[in-house]
Image (cartoon, rainbow, N blue to C red; front, side, top):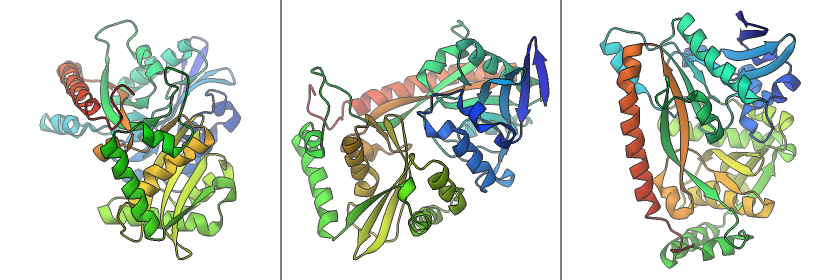
Length: 391
């Protein structure tokens, strides 16, 4: 589909294969691996996105002649599976009134609740073109709504157009992130012991005990980066991933071919932590590295050992960040247990355009109330920080 806006052409694409990778990647700074052409196109061509699971590529692009000047990774959704911004109550309300909530239009990275740029463009003007075009095309295609999930804080103000009560409804939620930012003296933690020294006695003792249990069980760890990952390493990590999803009865969207694609096309981004005992891998965590941040995505284990999950998914990642000089570690959505291990509350953002004026007006105070509740929750969490007071 193609429309024109003055000199600009707006096109909807059913595959990132229709865009040259260099053109797409010229629109972002490359520090977030999830919006790279290699990651998103890899999901399309290696069986991770299936229409029967509710995902159909519907990417929004803006062109000036043959030049791609703005883009948004986006999908038509037939359900809310794999989004991590929960709108089930909204869908239920639509159904109660005899209206169709699906299909809806979602700008996000599939199955990845990771904050990153969603309005890919080099200027604020072109980012606003994307926002306006998404709302206009959503109405033209008679979709119920358009959603932009886990956008960056810098992008947030672009949705309002200077209006306190704009049409793009804001929502927030809380994740738990590790940060190694300079203190008042400009110093950062350089190793795990320095990190632990910032904890109060109770929490520091607990972490040392958890790590000691894993070590006493004879478990060692091997860090595998994409370029060094063998076929067996990738197959083993994928097997662990499948095990986790089978335990919870959920769809395992990522294919082994996609992991192989990441290792081949994004070797500097893929990081795998493999737990081994007696020469055999027993657990693993799959992460992506971008800019100054490590992103924890999936884990799996074939044995049950005290502390193995925390060591594999959190402490090994923190150790890696400290060695590599990374400032942030985002280990995934949800999980209050992360707080006691040094991951502090951090807000994540989303925006929502509702086509039906009545529903939009009804949801506006709902979103405000939800945001107030989330902020109170984050304040309560902050009072339970494991770090020494004043640090």
